[in-house]
Image (tube, rainbow, N blue to C red; front, side, top):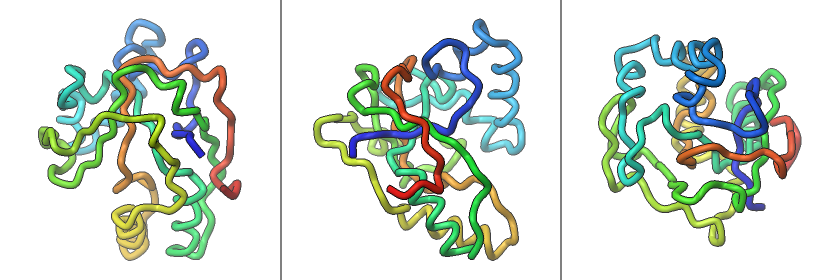
Amino acid sequence: MKFVFHQRVDLVGDALVPASDLAALDPAGYARAMAKYDDTPERQRLRATEIPGLARTWTEVVFLSPVHPHAIWRAWREVRGKELPRAEFWAIPVDDLPAGTVALDRTVTSTGDPIDASEVAAFHPASFVTATEAPAANRAWLEEMVRRGVSGAWFHGIPHVLAPGAVPLGNAQVIGWEQPI
């Protein structure tokens, strides 16, 4: 499989766009997108966090997951013993990603800190394979959430694929995360 994933959101047009682009296209959507960064000082700093090698900030890229959503859903069910509520995702062929797309795997820095250049690598569609298991860091996060009795942030500990511009959805498929791989 050669797909990356994005949870379905309301669209303006026929492509996913960086949150910063919504300011001109959909001011209310932009306000909703920016509000999710208001809850902690670390997340507030994310808005201005630069992506090494892209000359763009956190809100100027489209975030995509290289992990099939079913892997996360399955890990949550195994850890929690309960299924997540229904959610839909776009499964986007990697060949449709814009030039300059990179992979980010935050293993050195923390949320809100400047990203270390070693955490960013060029994204190569030809050698990419969709991950079908939740990474160990994600599973550990899910286990911690269960211990604390909370839910949410199911994508914590998962690397990101960052697209520096609009991601067309003409060839994307819609899937639910409960759908097996």
